[in-house]
Length: 67
Image (cartoon, rainbow, N blue to C red; front, top):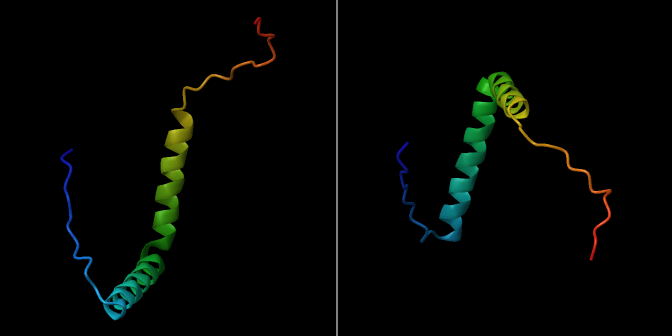
């Protein structure tokens, strides 16, 4: 995988920044309406894969430590 950098102009006026935020809010809402159920399934599946591949071992911390 190649890392890509996306450059974004940050010299906006407060009005321009507010317009962008409004656009992103609208975009998020429309995408959620269209793909919300599929996104939920996708995220649940991803979490299940992560949970099933965890190789963590529970450690006992009840042992006395000699100092």
